[in-house]
Length: 313
Image 1 (cartoon, rainbow, N blue to C red):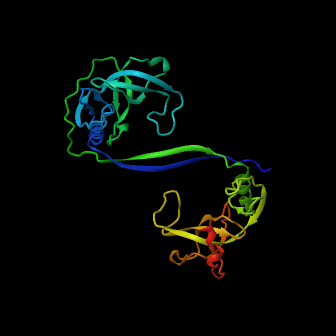
Image 2: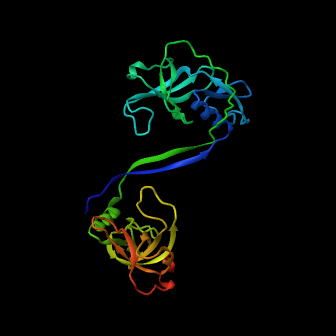
Image 3: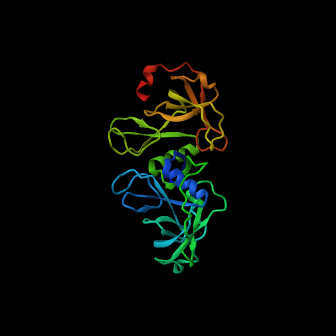
């Protein structure tokens, strides 16, 4: 049995969102070294501010400045900071109730160790040197033993308000393909494409899944397919991905390899993008050091009849 593989993977994309008037004022305030909250109908001040009262669901817009000093209400020590976290040395995650606020703000506390952190300790904001209108404009909190700061009473009105933000989203995880797909990947390393046949319906699935999605029974019989196949459907890509050195436009297609009962996807090359069509016969092209086909190119054969691939669209 081949070795079961595993690899670290990351899914990352920028998430762009617009801001309502309350969040716009809050983030613009951070850029200007001002912390704003919002006052509810019953007099509570919420920091960070929200646009609707979490108790009554009433819309709230009454902005009020609070102090950059406050009190730790609870905390947890972070021994191993991760990429993108506020500090690159061990720190405490803290909930801080800023002076003048009735709720707590989550952020990092720069402290020499867990013995230096306690519930009830006084802290203050450490502002980032460069600020752009984001929660990271607060670099972190730091211990503070002085008097409570007095807010200047800012109205929350700004001439150049932040109206939108781009927040990077990232998920890091370890992927293990399991027995069936590990065998598939090992075969690709030898420039072979293999699937597995269902012992019940006799369909061949590529890439193999270890079980038939139709019959629900385990699959084990390996079947080599391709390397030629038929384009069943395709799309023209016009937006360049930052991690792919491929000029746009290009074509990404579903390809039914000969001998397979499930279409896989791959890039089409060796032909102008506007000449790719359903039924086009293609073959795998491997680069010198690749463990998988770099792309698929036309074979020069006549196009496949629609009836031969209509069930694989």
